[in-house]
Image 1 (cartoon, rainbow, N blue to C red):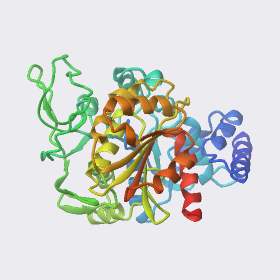
Image 2 (tube, rainbow, N blue to C red):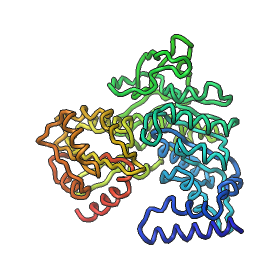
Image 3 (spheres, rainbow, N blue to C red):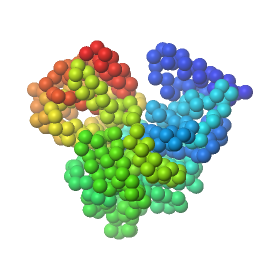
Image 4 (cartoon, rainbow, N blue to C red):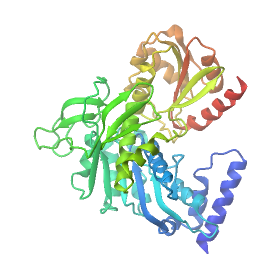
Amino acid sequence: MRKIIAVWAAKLASALSKLLGKNGSTIPGTVALKICPDILSRMSKDIDKGIIAVWGTNGKTTTNNMIYTVLKEQGYNIVCNAVGSNMLSGVVSAFVSYSTLSGKVKADYACLEMDEAYARIILQYLTPNKIVITNLFRDQMDRYGEIDTTISYIQKALEKAPDATLILNGDDPLTASLGKEHKNTLYYGITENLGLNLNETREGRYCRFCGTELKYDFYQYGQLGKYRCDKCGFKRPIPQYDGKNITSDDYVSFDVSGTHVDLPCKGIYNIYNALGAFALSDSCGIEKQKIAEGLHNYKGQSGRMEEFTIGGKLVVFNLAKNPAGFNQSIGNIISEKRTKDVIIGINDNDADGNDVSWLWDVDFEKLCDPSITSYTASGIRAKDMGVRFKYSGVDEKKLTVGGDMKQDIINAVKGKGERVYIVINYTLLFSTKKILKELEEEL
């Protein structure tokens, strides 16, 4: 009876939240947990074929939703926290939204993105059969601490799922190290040198097993690449799912396991996301060509290189939450040959991380490009971003320190550039998307 009452209350809370215009992706779960603290344990037992967990610093929402798309197109019923609410309350909300009024969940799979710090808590209530880990970078240091702290959280979570199949990004030495002593591990990666030659901040420079500095034949981006430890022998594993024949013009494509994949996405990082989704789907027994078709039909989630047309001008909107994510966004901006106006929005709410010193680890210097016609710093920490722009060496005559996102977007759309690029961190996501939708109708 307690579970049923919790489900009713949660569904009512969800309906009221939507009536009030709120996103409401965690409120149902919060309500349900207060009434029935073990509701997730009860509901997760209804999943028929398996529970899939996706962890990692960057790309987990995209990877999770790519997996969901592939499985959904095969006719499976799936519980999924598609909007990226990845803490305990968000996972419970996903189950509640899929359940009947009696609390029954009729689903083949649960496909669940999980926050790295909360995975060990969520796994107290359910046990995944398969776990994808995308990559590990420094993120919100006032919340996670250094990268070793994040890894310790993940190791504690893995102890709760010793029989799960791990699907790991083998090009990331931090992620690959987690599979060394796990009995069921598959790796994905890109063996060919893409020649990106990015001069970025590198995580995981030292071997996690002996502390020796790793040697690299080449980097793809961040610390991802072909690496080895000359002292203890730890090295990049040979991936079972190896991306080949990669193209990255307007959109990206690649071959894997003898199958060609065309993605409706930009950015090399999305090839890694798709490789993780391909590996997971293949491990579920789905025909490879069907996986490729599902990935081709994937539609990006809110703020993931999302496109709007405002005043006849294309506006590209992207979420980035840490230096690695911002560096990839900057790479996409400067690879665009058209002229453009750029807005960087920074908030410092709890979900963003209150410490914004990480801005100095982002390679904003690469935005000193003649194709950029204006720079705007926006968000709560617009002034901090303005200072960072100044020290990056951008033309100060092109720089505006704003703060009112709607007005900042209107000004950029009226600017000289052929396109507008907006990169924001987490708590600006939904409010900025709402503004963009309104401006599509107004201008």
